[in-house]
Image (cartoon, rainbow, N blue to C red; front, top):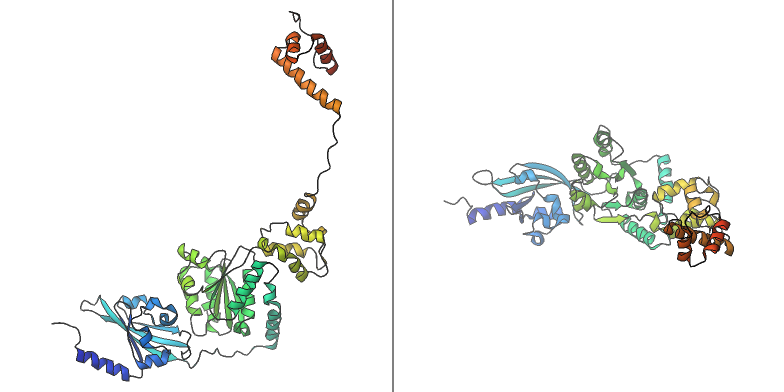
Length: 432
């Protein structure tokens, strides 16, 4: 006898759930959405008719918040709290209880029932009272970190500023990559201070510079940042240096209702780090929708006059600017700031530049003085010496044979040998 419910039974439970005030949805064993009642549509702002039969991985933006966790598909119940997707009627976060539907052997999962509860009336972040001194510091930072800090006459700089403007206009996560010292954190601060998140704090964490337990305590320990709504943007410098469990925990905080916006910086892309196993996949699949490459300073040499004018007063010497543009800048922005610090707030001169730049690019490019032209007699004498020495070596020191090789009389060769002081008298028996 079949264990499948009869049409009458199926109609009964569907009618019950349709009238229910609880938001209910059902995934089949193939992980496709098979049912959602009207209360689910009201709670989520989504249409069941639109997503009916959609596999949960096929639409991450709308269906990922209601995706059953792996342990549910393994046969265990679970209760989770997740941020709602962006929608006109969606709530701030949801509490979802997943109940697996097991087969006869209790190992086969035939489907999953989800019960969704709306928590909170809106996604609006709670207001935080900010002291006047802190507000003044934030205002100064906002005035400093403008898009002009990234822009410049070079094409790569204009592209960087344009990408930063697009990132600041939305709330999604951002992945920034580039060589060490190119200013990835500066780009992250520009995005933060020109976005709605600027009313809250920017927190930058050097993931490779601190022990993981210290970072975990700062974020999730007693009185940690994760327990407060003050963080607007969380910047992770090289998140691949963190242990994978801590990576996942940070992502869970950023995906919560009042979690911060996540911006990451690294020397390579999120996809490459995920493929190498150093980063959990969610960093690429959900937290790198905007990817920005910060160009190296050697790609922005046309920006150097503008950069110097922003950092130092007065007009820089043309020779100093030419030297800066001729250098390859392996340390990028960080190295440039160290070089300009030698000017101590004065107009830049070539004397302020370090020796490696000044000597190699200024002195090294000066043409060396031309050597004096040798006299004709000196050249002829040098050639004659080499030819006579070679002929004597070939003839074994016999003057007659050497003279024949050179095509001169023996007496003349003897006189030239004496004049050039090439040796003593010819050996005996040389007349033969």
